[in-house]
Image 1 (spheres, rainbow, N blue to C red):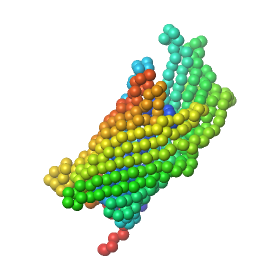
Image 2: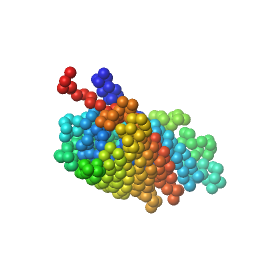
Image 3: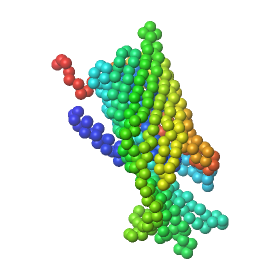
Image 4: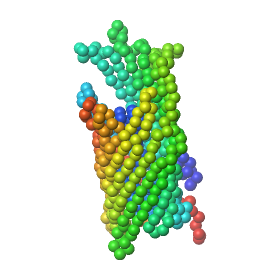
Length: 438
């Protein structure tokens, strides 16, 4: 039975790699819409994780691998995300909606000893999936002149191996190896309108195509310090992480060419019609640059917890349509926590439910027309324990909701409102261990 489960776990990972994710037009820049870290437990609390040490034995923290001092069980998580994006722009009074549902996280974690814990995780890190058409009209506002078509596709995934070590009752350290892999493509096509035929079909297309092949590897180091007042059961936590050490780079192939399509769907080029105007290949070594996080938290054991966190990411450089494009440094402020009314109250099921809450503000890495593409939101969630779940073996159904805004209407840019729903399961037990007694 356990072998069948492991095979199914690997199959789910293959499906995650093959799926297509929806995102916003801002995904045209860089490596697309960043999805990670989108675990339900983290996002339901506004993104706090650096100083979050779970009071329970069934939750493994990948964001800060040092925060797993209390982890004692084998935990398997499967999570899915439903994204709903609503776009608006003053440019031609544009309004649009996009929806996407995808498998967002699979992970398995287990203790190697009382002090050493290990976890393996697989998630989509970022994605491109957009198709935008703009048309320029003549002065009469009816006769077409030319059309631009912007297309993007691909997903960048991340696989992680995390290990934590508990030095003593208060201090822990951890390390995580991060592998990023995937292909991201952008295509910008320009074509003129044939006024004699009254169509764009059959005309030569000028296409600018960028293909990014990513195989990147870096490390995350973390540490945490937690004190417990045994008289009051109050806890104070400090945590910090740093991600660095890129060992690879991104290969970018850029092609500027003209060609014609042989079909109305514009999927097949006419044989021999393509003429290469410019073609080159570059390598970007600063794809996933330095990142750092600092958090503090305070709470009452097995009852409630609150935390604040500051994240920093250095701006990266990337080649985009044959030109170098630089991103600005990113800052994010998060606050959140959880509340458990009374897990020993077996007369009331909802007294044993964990309620999560949070909020965040992020200065984005994009700066367009002098405007930072910032993001903010609020979140909430619950962990519904299974009927036979105890406080020492807390398995259950995870549900999280995130509502927020990104972008601006200034300078004909795009305002993005989003509602993200996440659902998943955490199966935790003393699996894969030999029993000492029959």
